[in-house]
Length: 304
Length: 331
Image 1 (tube, each protein chain N blue to C red):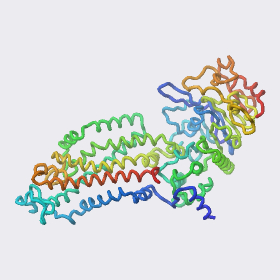
Image 2: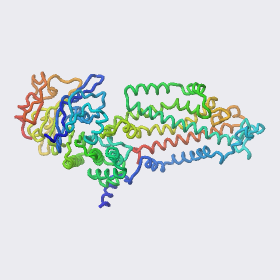
Image 3: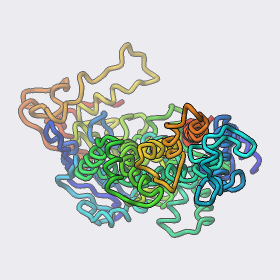
Image 4: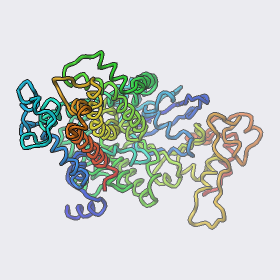
């Protein structure tokens, strides 16, 4: 009896599995994506140097305070002692690049999470309630988007003085969240008019439940993808701001400060630029590719 | 009359837009008894769906506004009810099936989850009890292999199966009144019949009141007891379905009935009602149907008729209701 039913079900549906979630389905698709595995491999490498820099580099070689850098070793080419050469201060470029990964990636991750959380919340509220709420919030999005990025960041960073990565992270987040907000707002307006939202209301769901359970999962997809892609771009933005001397400041260092320092030494010692810039490019590329793979996997309608 | 579940009286809904106000529903009254099916018939834009959404309290306000009338569910007035109170009525006492089940089911939540969630929220069942209850209700709407299909997403079902799931969701909490807004329009003819059979079997079983909104007279003939014909927001004719099908008292209903293709007759061209329903912003003077009515006279162009009762339970909005009623040939 139950066997007969099973056969009927199999003949109608594509792939009836006992119980699945959106995420397990997304994972099922991701596992089959070459782009995903390529970006994942790159990210494992990045994660490794971010989490355990000590495994592959010597922190002592990044600072003259610890005696690791010696001016007599300045701008040396790759050798057995300095695998990828040294910079102007005589510090090991490989060690600096490895230890410089953590602040760079941290800025990217925190800013991406921050912009998505702020953007999604305000975008959801603006899109769902519409009317005056929407008008006011949308104008606020416009004002923030209207601020020229670099000038805005320069002004902000000359006003805010937070230690380490926090100043630059805050500046990037403040100037970028409206992108996610606008996207979630647009998707919310689209979802709000859908029959399933009307049906949820017809079944007695309240506003909070409709927003969080029915609209958000349908509206957040694109902004998660954008978050992953912009994570890479935020790392680049940190480098830009640090290059301008506004981001991370000495004695802290990141890929951005290294690229900035390399401008004087590029012709004498090109490795001072290529190593941090190469790692930066790999990381940004990995996040952008991952963003694309995830965007395909998160959409159940695209599923084959 | 003691078994009246839903009583709608002189319901009026207006839409306020830039082009002015449009009366989408204009003084509609009807009742639904226990175990009874009422069919609301009309062309698109006649106010059928707006009536349904007004009863459910899910009209977008603004632009819509309920400007008058009353909706009583088991004697309790719903118009003007506090939103938090209304929420308790929806789903549990009155529910609504939508036309296109694919867009009415949340695409990112599995169907089992969507139904079992209602048991958890409204009835406080545990996760596993809710799952059992969900599988039961999926079996009631005849989903083959309900326990296996529990975890599937809406897009993984065929159109007919999706409409069954939608029905399962809406009857899960055993509402007293179920509104079905064009439940079979998006389906092909054989599946339409199955869904209608399912709806009327469920209605017999639970003795709920069923409101069937449709523009297809053929679909409702076998399942409804009463019918209300709407035109441009107004009730044009209402009464027992058999009587209206054989003895209509309204030229508009007659036009609708004549435009049903019949299998046993050989005719050249199918008769159709000429013209289009009037714009809600620019209604004709007099009877709303007069520009399209083959029997229109100066009286029709001058003043709008009231609902005239040719039988105690059979009303028609026509100056010549009695004449049409008397002259109508049997179909």
